[in-house]
Amino acid sequence: MEVETPERAHDDSSSSHGLGNLISIGALCCLWLGLVTYGWARWGSVTVDSGREIYVAAALAQGKMLYRDAWYPYGPGAPYLNAFLFRIFGIHTTVAYLAGALAGLAEALTLFRCALYLVAYSPVAFALGYVVLIQSFGPGIFNYPLPYSYASVYGSVAACLFLLYAIRVAFHRTKANVFWAGIWSAVALLMKLEYGFACFGTLAVLQIGLIVRQRSWLAASGNLLAIIPALLVCAVAIGWMVSIRGVAFITQENFTSWPTSYFMQKYGEFWLGGQGLELSLGKVLSALLITVGFVTFWTGFRFWLRSVFRKLSFRNAGLAMMVGAGAIAFWMTRPERLNDDVAKLVFPRPMVFMVSLAVPVAAFLFWRNHWRARDLAILVTMTFGLLLAFRILFGMLPHAYAIFYNGPVLLAFCWLLFSIAIPANGGRSDPRVRKAIFLLCAALCTWVTVQVYPDYREMRKRRVALESERGTIYLPETMLPAWAEAVDFMLHTKITRELVMSIPEDTALYFFSDVLCPVRVCIFHPGVVAPGHMMDQVIGEMRQAQVRYIIWSNRKFYEYDVPEFGRDFDMPLGEYIRSNYRPVQEFGSGEQPDAWHATLWERK
Image 1: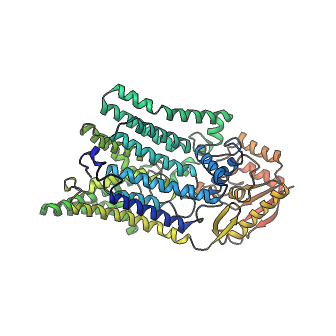
Image 2: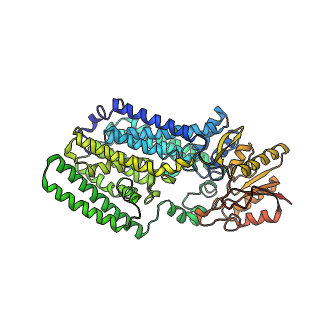
Image 3: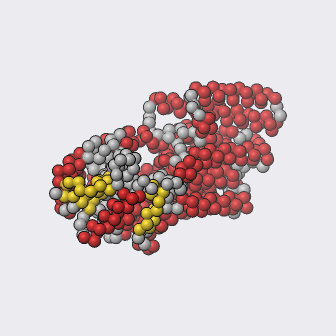
C-alpha cells in the first residue's frame, strides 16, 4: 500500500491518538484481559523448561549468582529482571504470570504502533496486535505468562521496541531515537543472543541508510555516537560474565545455543530442523513454489479489484489467468486440507523465506525512489524480520517457538501482502479499498483463531490446582497426585536438612518446595552437560554435597531423538546414580505410560 507523504502520514491518519486507533487499542487491552483471566495459572509446564525459569530467578532472589551458582542457557537479563521482581513483590507465581502477561501486551501495542507507521490503517494494526495476543496465551510452554524461556519473552519485547525506534529514526532523524534504538538493541542482546544480533545487524543497515540519505559524515558520526552507551552496556555485561570463570565457561558450559557448544554440535541440526530451519533443496523448492502461487493469486486479486474500480472487462481476463495459474501452483504442492490452502494465502509457513526474497526488492525501491524515508523504514522492517526469524525460515506458525519471533516478520509480511493485493492507485480513502483491506485482515485473524482455538478449549479440561505458599498452578489431573507427593517429600527433606535432587528436569519441584538444587546444573536435557570435564564436575558436586535422595522422573526427550536420560545420553551420570543409589519409593504409577511418575533413589 502507498502512503502519500511519509513524514506527514504519522501526524494524521496514522496517529496513535486517532479515535479509530484508540478504539483498537482499547479492544486489544480487553482481549488481553480476557485471555489472562481465562487462562490464569493454566500456562507452562512443571516438567519442561518453565520450572527452570522461575526456579533460577528465585535462586537469584535468594542470593545465588547466575552462571556460577545456577546454570542458565541464555543472557542474564531475564533471570535478574524476574529476581528483581521477586525481591520486590515476593517469590510467587502471580508475579511471574503478570510479568509475562504484561510483556505480551507491550509487544502487541508496540507492533500496533509500528504498523501505523507503515500502513496507516488501524484495522491492519489491530490485526497484527490481535494475532500477537491470541497466539501468546495458550497452554504449554509456548506462551508469555509462564514460557519455556522468559529470555524469549522479554527479548521479543525489546526487539519490537527496537523496531519501533528504528522506524522512527527513518522518519525522524533525532539523536534520541537513535539512542533508544541502540539501548533496546543492548537490552535484547542481554536477554537472548539472537535477538541482540538481529537488532544490531539491522541497526547497521539503518546507519548505512542514514548515511546515504543525509550525505553527511558529520551527521553519521553523531548517529554513531548516539549508540555508544548501548555498546558500553553490552561491554560491561559481557565483561562481568567473562570475569566469572572465563569465556569458555559461559559459551561452552552455559550457552547451549552457542555455535561451538556441545549441544549445537551434537543435537543442533536435528533441533533446528524441527523448528523450521532445514536448508535442503527440497525445502527451498517447495517454498519457492508456494511463493509463486502466493504472488500469482494475490496479483490476480489485485487485477480483479482494479477491474471493479474501473469496470474494464480485460481485467477479468487477467483475473482468470492469474487465479488459474495460482490454482495450478497450489495444486502442485498437494495440500491435504482446505486449511493448508488458506494458510498459504494469509499465513504461509515459509513466510520468513518470502520476506527474505523481498529484502533486495525493498533495497532497490529505496534506491529507485531517491532514498525516501518510508522506503528506508520498509527496508529496515524487512531486514529485521528476516534476521530475527531466520531460525524459523520454513516454520512460521501461530504457536510453538514461532510466537517469540514472528511479530516483526508478520508486520513485514502484512506490508508485502497489501502491496501485492491492493491497487496503489485505488487510494486509502476509497471505501472499496478499505473493505478489501478489512477482509484480508479478517481472513488473517480468523485463520489464526481457528488454529489456536483447540488449545484454548483444552486449557480448562481435566486440570486440578496445585496450591502452595509460592502460588497456584493447574496440572493435569493424571499428574497432580504423584507430582504433589514429590513436592511434599521435598518439603520434608527441607525440614530434615537432607539434600534431594530432581532429574532429568522437573525443576519446578525446587521452586514449589522452596528448596535449592544441590548442584550448579538444575536441568539435564540432552546436551546441557558436555562429556568430560563438565560431567566430572557435576558428579563431583553431587559427591561433595552428599546428595541423599534423587527423584528420577519418566521425562522422555523425543524432540532431540534421544528419549531416555542415563541411557541414550548422559550415560556416565546415569551409571553413577545406578551404582551409588538404590530405588526406594515410587511417586505415581507406571501403569499409564503417558502419565507422570518418578522413582525415588536413596544413596546406598
